[in-house]
Length: 401
Image (cartoon, rainbow, N blue to C red; front, side):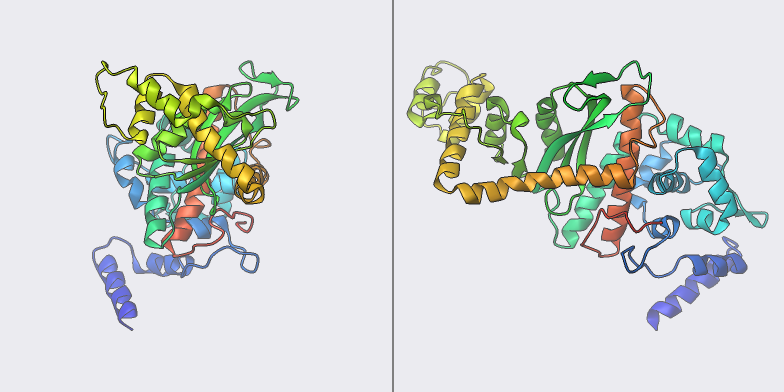
């Protein structure tokens, strides 16, 4: 009863202050209904779903995009672009035609009434917003939405980013893309998307687009470091064998991250990772700044890693992992084989966002923006669910129509 009274008071004040005429308020009330999640039993229009998304986390960012009040609300423009991705539309004219034919959808996305009709931007307006105004900012949008999702999840008892998966997937380029390279393993020309994803909730936390022939292992340290700077503390990180070299194993170890990776059959115990050897190596630097005769083993490993002894430090952590694998192979493989989930995520994203089919641009820089934009649409779905206290199937977009 109190909620109903409060709603009526707000409605009255809005009408009195001429912020929005009462007939339009009534129309909007019919659009913005209580939130219901999009599920198998309850498919939902993507515009209706996005109408429930609160983008307050982007308000300061939006203010920096314009020198004066924009003709179209920045929030509505962004939602329209994300809506286009969720609907698997390829072109902005297609989006505009849809909004013109479905003005209620345009209102749900946040476009306003003007002279008795919804003020819908042109294809040029939307293209400019997406490719010029947000040109160098899609990573910022991704980061802000990700951080807000992590913070919101924590209020619901979810710790996104504690256990993560990392892997790369190929993205086939458009024909005659001069920057795209051919990869003999995948048998295509294209690019590579390296992503870090929450292990349990499948939420994308970091994305890096590279040449298809680039070494994806080089993305691990920058991506996990960036997550740490954002306050996301990874404790367990599952990777395939391509990431498991001495340097990366050692780096994860000294940063308190338990790495889960394939134990190759040709790996042997490396005595350079034995504690006595490491202590003797440390003692040889007794004249160096930072040396401490009473240093703990953890401090010794940090010191040596920074000095460039990546094999020795990596061997220490790899030896321990090999011992754990030998002592309880089944338990280790049970933890490691969650890696296959990442391949499942990649297939799901490719199918339900039609990433390759909808790719209309060429060159690494433009393809990166395209990929980040699509991952922002996924985070929009995640954030919307969390804002409405949904904790399951956070990244499901199959039932958004």
